[in-house]
Each structure stands twice: as structure tokens, then as C-alpha cells.
Image (cartoon, rainbow, N blue to C red; front, side, top):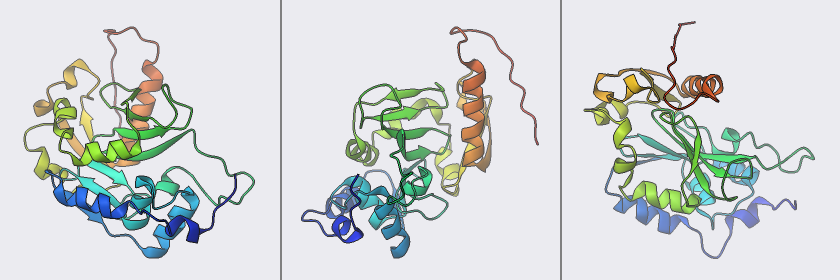
Amino acid sequence: MQVRPLVDLVHVDKPVWPWLAERIDAAPAPVRVVEVDGDAAADCLYRLQVTVGSTLGALAFNTGGLFVDHGWLRLLGGGGDGLADLATANNMGDPTKATAQPPPYLLVAHDVVGGRFAVNGGDLPGQPGEVHYWGPDTLQWQPLGLGHSGLVEWALSGVIAEFYESLRWPGWEAETEPVRGDESFALHPPPFTQQGQDKANVSRSVVPWIEVVGMYDEFSRQLEGLPPGSEFEITITES
């Protein structure tokens, strides 16, 4: 792969940011734009090797990320306020190194209950470039039938309320607002269990996002292969 210099990634005929800024301003749900350090944004864009003529590049270079709908959904950008930048979140280093390889999928967003959105790089079912969602209620990747730009439009359109209806509880807005980008809610019983379906009666604690992801990945590993409807017992211990 030919590595493009930063100047070529920044100076394009049609940058996406003006269009994206209009979408943010017109969003029906509250959107908070995280400020990004200029040097960090440039470094992220260079490691990603995308231009600001893409939605991905626009987010990386112009924002630290977006907190959408009271912070329930977090779209990754150049990093800040607890959010990892897009390149770091996907373990992308210096593109000039011989060992540099595109990730099997590109993590581009996550939510406050441990869900993840990723662009398929070939390691997920479905078409390359298609966005998939990994939900705490399904414990598996599911294709959404849209690309990254489509995901951002969808996130800013206000329709995520319907998408997340089964995962929300009364008063979630006030509880979610103060949660940082590197934190998430741990729900007990978990959403993939029958007992965890009534979110109004599920206990919640704010813990590091990486711990929630690790917990669900371990659940997924242990439950893999069980027939639907199987009974199992979950024991959670504090370390």
C-alpha cells in the first residue's frame, strides 16, 4: 500500500465536515462534539490513511468524537473525553512500517451498554465495508446493511430511539449524561438473559467500558454452541 502524506489527506476538493456539521446542528436528539487536539487529529488521520473527503476522516480530523442522544451512542473521532481515537481503538500504528496491516474490522462507535459498531474489513459475515453491530442482548455481530457514512446519518437522524428501545429504562437520559466515553453501564441480569429483559428492574453500575466488553466477550465464548432457550447459571464475582 502506498502511504499518502498528511497534506494529501487534508487538502481535498470536497471536505465532508461542512455537510456533517449541518447534520449535527439539525439532529433531533442532543449531540455533543468533543474538542480534539490538532496534533492528535492529524496523527490519527495519518495512521488511518483516509482523507477528510470521507465521513471517517472528517470525524477523525475535526472532532474528538460525538456523544449522541445524551451520550448513549459514541461515534469515534480523533479522541478525547475518554474516547479513544479511531486509529488507537483499532491498533493502527505507523503506516510506513512493514508490519502495518488493515484491521479485520474497524471499530467506529460504541454505546453506553457495551454494544459496538464496526466496519467489516473481511473478518465479519456480510459484505466488506458494511457496518455490523455487536449487541449485549445477542452476543453476536449482525450486519446493518449500511456503510460508515450511512451509520453516521442514521445516528444523527433520531431513529436510534427505536433501535435501542429494548435496552433502555425509565430515566436513562439523566443517568447516561455524566458517563464518560471510556465507561459503560454493567447491567445485571445481562440483556441476553430472560431475567434481564425488564430493564426497569435491572441493576446498573458504571464501570470501565473495556471491562464491560471483556465481560460480554467471555459470556459469548462460554455460551457459544448452546441451543436457543438453554438454561444456564451466571456467577459474577468481584476481583
